[in-house]
Length: 535
Image (cartoon, rainbow, N blue to C red; front, side):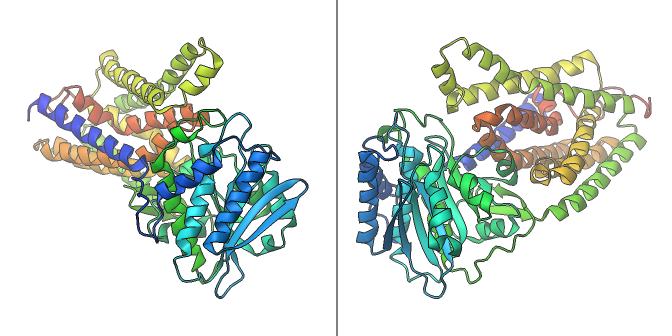
């Protein structure tokens, strides 16, 4: 196979895998207003937002009272039981569908207030509209086994006081078994699971079992994302089991630009899928009490299903992968495909690459800091600028991998296995101390080792490199599909962007042979003389 064609094939494969990862993170298409009455329709939900977000709704303002009156009237028209909770000057609006056989409550919540300087169309009129449309759809069903309650809280923007009043003073709070919160840290993007209660194994399993939930997220996002909302601020600290979902692309919340014109219907549809599928699932769940199983390690695959397992398995899997690494390493050294000096240099190359990874954010951030603070605050929080940062980072990283072989002429197998040495250490460390993110090392490492074993066998026996290349293509694409969505979601969480860039550098470390192939190198055993093992 010609080098140019191989380089093109590798590029197309990795680019396609990256595109799949991007598509995984995009919210689904919105359903129109004439969609089935049993379905959630973003277009129907937006009609509520047009009323609620006509003006800012600061706590204790007349606009807030008007919005609360509107929500209460809509709930009553749908046939829900309703109540207005007034406590210490705050007003919560509540509606519920009584359970057919249980007084246990599934609580869906969103905050009705906004900041004074903006109408809060997405933060959080979208959450309010999602709950209203979910309630409407559920009223077309037979009564659920458990009570499904919708709580529209006051004063979230100034300290989540409405949620606190519900927890502290409402008599039905003691019957709440699961809380599902919806908020917005941005005005666009997918609706991501950003927080759960501790010991979430049962919750994640229920999430995976819910129908049509279109779940986006991972245990890494859950562990690293910063979330400020009623659920993590009020409900979780006092022991309520549950989830917090949030939008956080394009962070123009708390500004006049969080308005109806800038709504993203697809984001609202995604929120609606989560709300309706989970409300129906928990509403009809026979046993609603959370047994508080250990935190799950989980990630979504192609947006189709969730891979989830207990942290107890992370150690066992890590031991197995470490064993495979030792086997591949021993084979490579015995066959003089690898050298210890070359492996050491490969590890050095990876570590320098991880230092280079966040530089794009540092450089661009320094440049932007010379502009006004308002522009700077918005620039690094919008998709186009994040894409610029990622492209700069990838260019710097690929340039470093190219120069590294100019500095010291070592084989691609050495460079590949050297990069995997720190990965093994990171996998072991995270599996023990931070299992929520261990999958970002474990599974790409496993596929990289399997493809390397296939490659080294072909290398040692002077076989055609076609099978080795196919194995590397599969390994690279799989690693991107597994880790890519969590990286993309993390990149738009502004507080974690440099950490996400470092993890992107880790992903590039798993793609060392693929990157070399794209630069026109070959992977057969005629590439260059080999250094004796142990040299």
